[in-house]
Image (cartoon, rainbow, N blue to C red; front, top):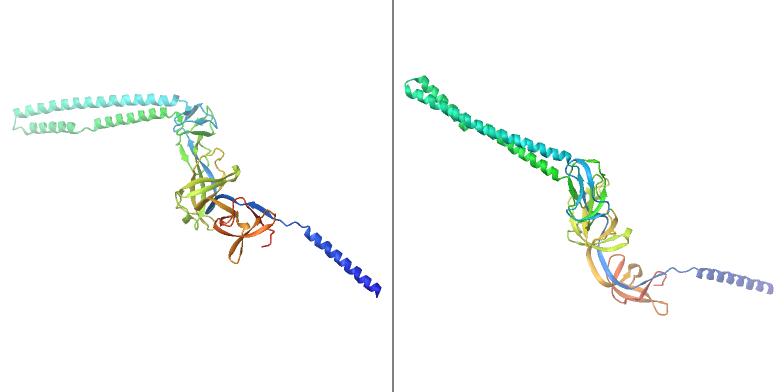
Length: 382
């Protein structure tokens, strides 16, 4: 009996030792918690959408074809409106002006000849009319003389009334004048000038290369064209473009305020406003309907480059300078909101709060906390 009792005691002792060892091992696992200060800030509530930066870019081209004679700028160079950026060789265009001047001179000479010839023809015809009238007056009963007079009179009236030759000559003069003005205008187009203050963003051609004339144009919603002679960016204007679903588009309107985050350059809460909302839908292969929305940033920033991705919040409500805590720090019991606050004794204290506006990540604290206090997130008995 004694041996059995000893065995039982040893067994119990061993069991307790193992249990104690397990308990110590369990207690050795650290409880994960995080802490966060209660701070003041701005709380923004609205619709979110992915976006892309679109700088105000103007594609510049010569309006006439020709050979590049001079390029006065380089990529990255700032320019002022009116600066001459590049120049074409004017040999062919100057020749075109000379040829147009010669054509005009010839047309004007033809017009003068037509006027003079008409006057001569009228004078000769009038003489014949007078001669026929004299003969008929001498023999008023002669029907043939009367008929001859009437014929000459008719010929004369036709010459007086018919002005087509002179009109045609005059039209040729006007056409030649227009051609000359066009040639002069083209000669002035050998200079490519900056339409705005800006910075040269791209330059494709070199001196000696031939360009084909085309129109310049400004593009506010997409990256610059690779076919332009050069591109210039307006540093004072930055746009951002996004798409909104058919369920969200009704909550976005022109002049609505927005906030933009651009992670690649570590920018957040960049202010802006909506400048256009498209009425034309875009439907993808899955049948999802979206609409394009464009906004303009309030202030330029040289760090922001064309094509950068961004995240846009189209604001519906905004509160400034309010106490904020993360939503993860708040828990609810019996319909009331609570947080765990770190005390001076390093022990968390359960405290009731009154929450206000929330954006799903942070919540405004109306009552229960002060700026600078620390809330404990996770690992605390609620």
